[in-house]
Length: 196
Image (tube, rainbow, N blue to C red):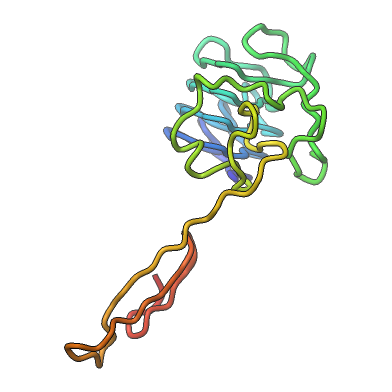
C-alpha cells in the first residue's frame, strides 16, 4: 500500500517505478498524485488529492482509477482500466459500478457484483502478478483476473517457508548445523548475528 505521500512536483505516491497489485491512496502532488512516470499492473489508484490528475506520464494495465482530478489521457496509456461510471468523461477507461466494500474506512476490496470482477485482460498479466498474489496475498486469478489490487473470492497463496542452515559460534566439525525456518518478509534472529 502506498499512502499519504506528498510531492511538490509529480508522483506523490510513486515516481519512476513498476508497481504490481498496489493500493495507491490519499497521496498529493501537483501532477500525478498517485503515480508519475510509472508502469502499473493491477493497482487501485484511489482518493488521491491533486489539482491535475491521479496518474501522469505512465502506463496502467488492469487498474482502477478514481479521484484525484482530471484524467491524463495525453501522456498516460490506460489498457483495460476502470473508473466509477460518470467520474471521467473519456473513452480511455471503462465505466462501471466498482462496488468497494467500504471506501469511507479505506477498504477498497471488491464486493460481490462489482464490475471489476473478472474484467481484467489476461494479456496484461505479468509473472510478478501471479508470484506474489493480490494485496491480501490471495491468488491473483480465480477465474479471470480482476481489475484493481484485490482479487474477489480468491483463495490464499501458499506462502513459501525458507530454511537456512548455519554453524553457530561454538560449532566444531561434525556438529549438525542449526536450521531456522522462516516466511518471506519475516524478521529472523540468528544466534550471534542479530536480526536479518
